[in-house]
Image 1 (cartoon, helix red, strand yellow):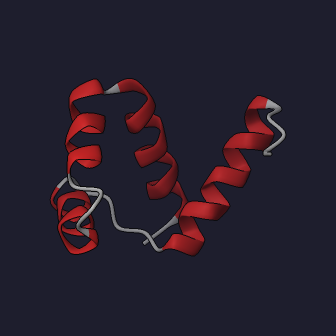
Image 2 (spheres, one colour; image 1 turned 120 degrees about the vertical axis):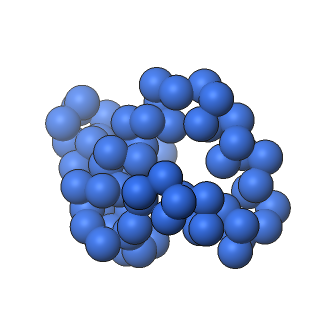
Length: 65
């Protein structure tokens, strides 16, 4: 599990429409969503995801709402 893994996930969500569509399709089933992420090589906690978001916000100069 890592922040870098979460950042890679965020970047893929932004760049890979097919991947984003599948994740969105599974979003109502938390277990299926996490399983899909693990199958695709993404292993991170929600805390790591939030930290990754913060790093990306800083990197791109985004102020979260």
